[in-house]
Amino acid sequence: MEGVGLVYPDGTRALRSIDLHIERGEFSFLVGASGSGKSSLLALVYREFVPTEGRVIVAGQDVAALPRRMVPYLRRQVGVVFQDFRLLPDKTVWENVGFALDVLGTGRKEKHHKVPISLELVGLADKSDAFPHQLSGGEQQRVSIARALVNAPPVLLADEPTGNVDPDVSWDIVQLLANIAERDTTVVVGTHDKYIVDRMRRRVVNLVQGTVVRDAKQGGSYDGT
Amino acid sequence: MERSGLEFILLETWTAIRRNLLITLAAIGNMTVSVAILGAFVVGAINLDYMASLQAKSASISVWLHDDADAGDIEAKLFGDLRVKETEFVSKDQAQQEWAEMAGVDPEALKIAGNPLSDIVRVKVADPDDMAAVAEFAEQLPGVAEVLYSRSVFDKILLLSHGIKVSGVVVGLLLVAATMLIVSTTIRLTIYARRREIRIMQLVGATNWFIRAPLVFEGAFQGIVGGILAAIALTIGYAYLHSYLAESLQFIKIVYSAQFLTAFALGLILAGALFGTAGAFISANRYLSEA
Image (cartoon, rainbow over all chains, first blue to last red; front, side, top):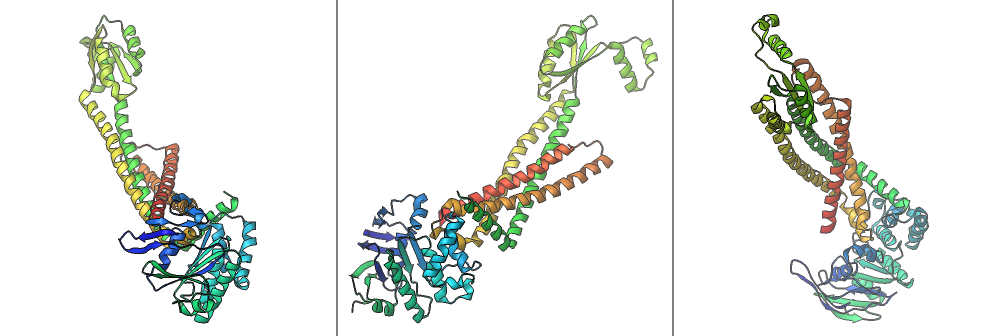
């Protein structure tokens, strides 16, 4: 990101002159209070929003310059995980993960190959036939991670992935995300979970009112202490 | 696209229809009523026009000849005109006979007084619109004494027939616009019910085409079912109307044949399919461009 700014249509400024570079395969935290611009920043990467200033480059592509009809192809490169899981309640775990491949027109054979790998990765291979409401919050979040990963995107974004799960499960989720980064996937986790950030000691980018106030490259903590 | 893609779209369509049964039923009901109103209007206009043209077609021009005129030549000239459909020569004596029958007088008795009538060529035109022009043409032919047709009645029928056509198209277009509005609004409901799926599809990188396809199929399905229901209702109603008219109001003739009914029913189903597809397409596009 180079000199990125974002102003919402209603005039609210969300982000201001952000310069940020994240390496391929890097694991980093994006921290800050609610309303500091974490979600907005992530949303620029999967082009939910287009920056009003500056450039956002994902895997060599300028996202802002991307024509509208190309956006779906960018999103296949960027997996996204949300606080509220966003699973389809009337589909099983297997179907929820498979859905991400279905909508890309993936063949049946490939689907039957990829879905189990993805579920295995998040440790839910035995819950394939369960429905989301039969799972705990942590398990549901794993399903949504499996869905984000099934297409093997080079970038994985997680917006408050632990916001709706128990504290002890949060740690597992973040560990899982860190393992995914080991597999040459760039992982950015937006969170305000101080405990987890401090315990992980990874790169921490701190946002306050839409600007980066601190970028601790390694061994970072939530508040710089 | 791969076969599994189409399979997925059709499966999605079917699940959505089953899951949102209430909304689907409401949409189909809406579609049925809309298509039926449009269909009833169209069939009404067709019949008004049909009745007017029946009247117009039965009308003929009477060309009265001078006694010394060459009737064969005049009839040939009239028949030679492309606008003329048929000609009939009625001799002076035949004319008197017809007149006597119409008046209820003994024709033999009339003959004693001599025959004041003249030979007539009756002309029927192919297109009622050409009536006046053909009459003018006939007037100019040598040997023609007078040309008669019920101009005022005729002009009114023509005017009515044109009025029906013009207002039919205007009202028809308004009805189509209203139907489209209702249909696309109804389909917005279906889309709204599926906004969660649509959101996820967008996030995992489904193309708009892929997101739209199940919605358009769903709209087409609703339209076809609505069209079939409207076709059934209107065809039955129309058959009843026909048998009622045949019994009690015989002078009113409506278009009625197996061919017409089939075409009408198929037309309604096709209209439903078109409305459903187009309505869904419009709504889906609007929704996707907003999101």
